[in-house]
Length: 372
Ligand code: NAD
Image (tube, rainbow, N blue to C red; front, side, top):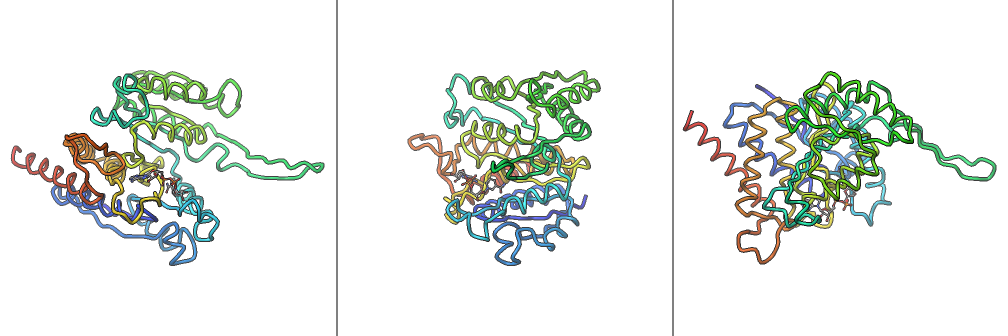
């Protein structure tokens, strides 16, 4: 199998963690005969510096001739957001790529390993029940892509953001959620505000209609305000959490806090044809950029999601995920997840963490080759 990947490291820690994820990708592809070619493109502030825009045509055409996009992160230091290099950086790059490639659903797996329970901000009796959630957020509807306008009427300033959903948009996201649930614990929680909003009423109705084709999966409805409380109080109840663009933006970040570091998380944004953009949901982490201490795990797990969702290579995805789990179980910790005084853990830098994952990928592959 031949695959072509557009590699867009972007800014800040993106430039540090992406090369480490590529080492893992190469270790898997070398041993499995998968032929992968990579083309690097500029995006975000890095692109602005070279081309004067955040998403140059060159980068778009690299992405268009690829089977998937591996994305790092974009954006500058919070104190420099007013500079042209950073103004509109995320909107011009990530939102533009979502729109261009019609990436309509975002998958964000949130799992807390028993070895990392103490990092979670939740009480241990809550975390110890187990947290393994797939947050699935619709990406192309809602008020993000509707009309935005600020007007002055009768001397009063009024701002409007139009929120809109078509039934096709809801059905596509619901279908993706039910299919994902089939490979998990077979439960979908559909989150909306159907007691107030028309878009949410349509959401609830269409999700229920799509559910008729998935009678092996349980469906529950939950209002978004209750869901926010339940995510903190009892996150173990959730399997697949399906929600709208805006509620998903907020709830997926609340869920992202549960494992204890943004550096541990991966995400996949897909279109209905399976083409996707794979990235850690965190930003460019300018506070630690250039220090070599960023956690590469989220970027490495994004490669696993690429194997699973875009290339349909489940075995390779599981291989990477289990190498990451084993590395964490063996006690290797980057600074963001390191707790002083624990004799069972070792502090490693970004490259050191990737070394551990690569060596576990290689030894699992060697074991499989020897036993086949
Ligand atoms: P951030 O996500 O970059 O960082 C928040 C915290 O998480 C920081 O303490 C950071 O050190 C830590 N962190 C993030 N990734 C880490 C990793 N791999 N390893 C260890 N620690 C990690 O959020 P911010 O500081 O608010 O934003 C910085 C820039 O990133 C801003 O310009 C923002 O607009 C942009 N941003 C981009 C994306 C994206 O590219 N998808 C997402 C969010 C924010």
